[in-house]
Image 1 (spheres, rainbow, N blue to C red):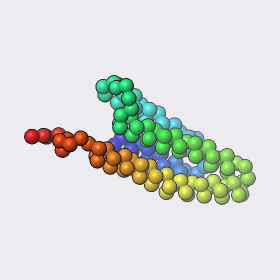
Image 2 (image 1 turned 180 degrees about the horizontal axis):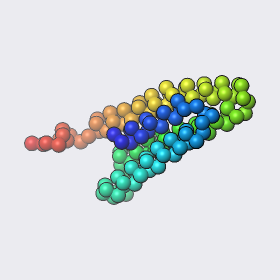
Image 3 (image 1 turned 135 degrees about the vertical axis):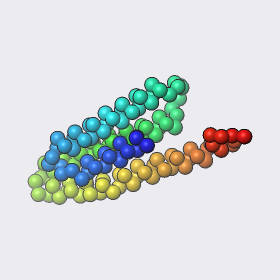
Image 4 (image 1 turned 90 degrees about the vertical axis):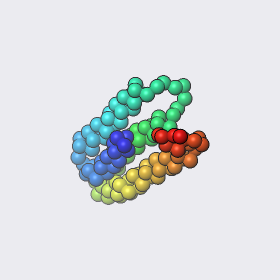
Amino acid sequence: VPSVMLAMMSSISYWINPSVAPARVGLCVTLLLSQFALMQTLARELPRVAYLTWMDIFLITGFHKSCLSLFIFGIVYNTAQQDKEKGAERAATIDAVCRVLLPVVYLAVISSMIIVAVQERPAGHGGPISP
């Protein structure tokens, strides 16, 4: 749950005006550092294995979503700076598309990951209480 919340909070950056770069960069960097700290904490607490687990892929997906927000801000900021009138209009269009598209894609990806994980559970693992 914390990973999903942090990744979805990165979508807030698309609502911040591109001309207010410190606020947008600060939000994105703070979320990236929080995601990284969460990944490190879980890596320290969970047993070490030599392969990627479902949890690793889930956390990496959220981390990439947060990285993408910062990358897209770079694109939006540069687009807005190129040509003051048309650039600002293009930047607003990019932000408007990302406000909807990226959270929907992220939720679709993690939903499909959960569905696949539930379907691939071995027989006899019906829940925490087994007969």
